[in-house]
Image 1 (cartoon, rainbow, N blue to C red):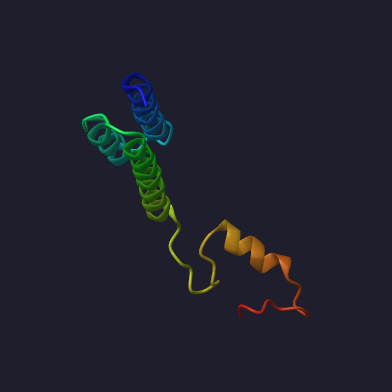
Image 2 (image 1 turned 135 degrees about the horizontal axis):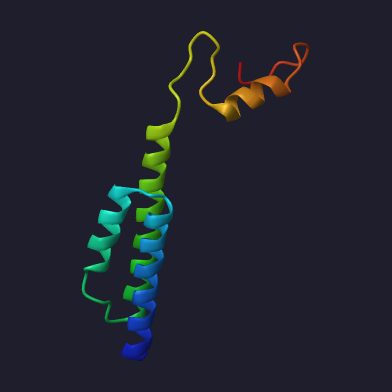
Length: 101
């Protein structure tokens, strides 16, 4: 495997992670993307694959944390956590309650 191809793939992974951070306007993700890109380039194809996996896990984990931080607090009076839960609650008629409750 040529070093040129490996470097090209490495740069692409770093650029994609940085674009992900910018599109979600997350300072934490931007900082982590910069730290990730500051690593020395991989030396083998296997290392490229491992870094792609690491980048995906980093983006997913940070975006999940960000989403959880923005989630509306649980409303015990109505039992609603967010709009999805509210929609699920409304989709069942009173004669056909969901099995969750």
